[in-house]
Image 1 (tube, rainbow, N blue to C red):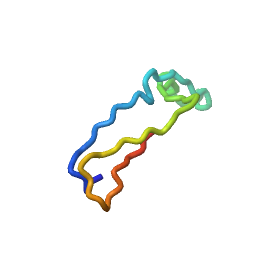
Image 2 (image 1 turned 90 degrees about the horizontal axis):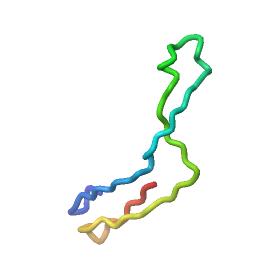
Image 3 (image 1 turned 30 degrees about the vertical axis):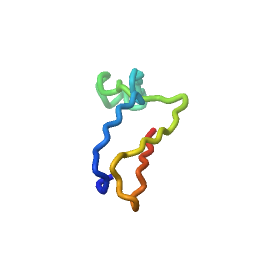
Image 4 (image 1 turned 90 degrees about the vertical axis):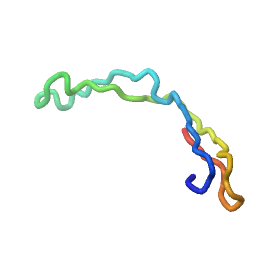
Length: 66
């Protein structure tokens, strides 16, 4: 939050281990390499909340992320 005195870096592994996916719907019009892509798929995920230090009293010091 821009009103807080500190920046906070959050590292996540939400897309670690991309799964190779191939879309065959456009196989007549596109080259084979264009049909393959790395995507993230999730079985389940949860939100975490971090408290940002140095926020004024009128600013909520919490940041939630997946």
